[in-house]
Image (cartoon, rainbow, N blue to C red; front, side, top):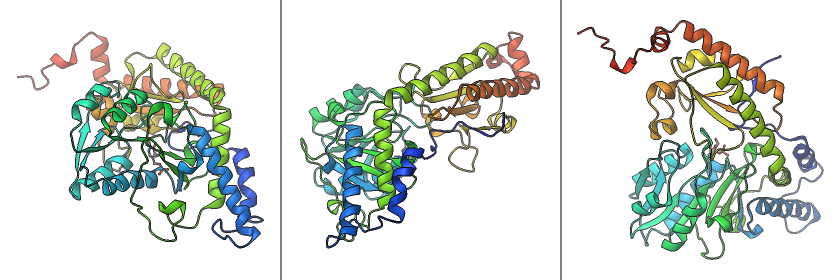
Length: 404
Ligand code: PLP
């Protein structure tokens, strides 16, 4: 098999050919500025943007007037959290989030802390989940917003969003949800879930990079935001700047394809994931699934291989484009903050790898990936005295390494 095999669908996805076809005219023939009201060039661009807005809204059960286009989820998260924090500061300055959120949320939270807001960072359970009860216990009179992601990008754990949404409604607290990994992959309905703000990103759903949206609830309650980008008053004043028409058309087309193919896409990715894991588990012992097997994104498999070192493992599988749980967000050797927050020990966190299966992955690729990882793990374990000792039944936690 000719490598490298792409198994990193949580990091990004290729643009679907149907999406690319939809986008192409908007780079050249239909190049107008969607804000030009006085001629057909502008009207055509505006019509395409309106169509994309409806496609994005349909993906998440929203109204098209509730969609604000952004440059992606990072920007949408900044707008949502900083925007509500500023708007509702007179009501309170307390925010609740999770230690396992994406850095885009955690770094915004840190920024807000410096501006005088108080943030409670909740630790998830060992599967990466939060209960509504845990969130309720952290709520205070001055809590203005809860920010919990729908599905985690590293381990694929899906949160009990509907229960959290119900709680937030009852308590009159806004609920912001990072839907980047969920929208387009599993059913997402903002009304059923009681979500007030939700972000999504084109490049995670076979659309282009650099474009996404923020859903902002308009009724029950009407959510208001302080804009983070001032200028010409685009996007109903919430996000100024000339619209990225080709990108937005691509995002809309990707949302439409994802909505129509949701079930078959999910079935395809999940069946490859099951096939891959079954093959790995048949051949190797001491392999652990990180996350929640019962509530997991269809194409996500995060595994820890005991007694092997993560970086050596990654080097042992040069033909697989995967993501490692160690050193994943920086050049440091810090293990993943998500695995740490769930209480996964440093050693297992260091030996974790995320395999992502998606629309273009084939059965042959899943089998090849399993065989490659089995080969690499076996090779490293042959060299590992610790693995040998464990095989002999020695309890490594009881070993007196210093000899005293
Ligand atoms: N949130 C989650 C859960 C993600 O997986 C990502 C992507 O890395 C982001 C936010 C940031 O998205 P974007 O690349 O659109 O800024």
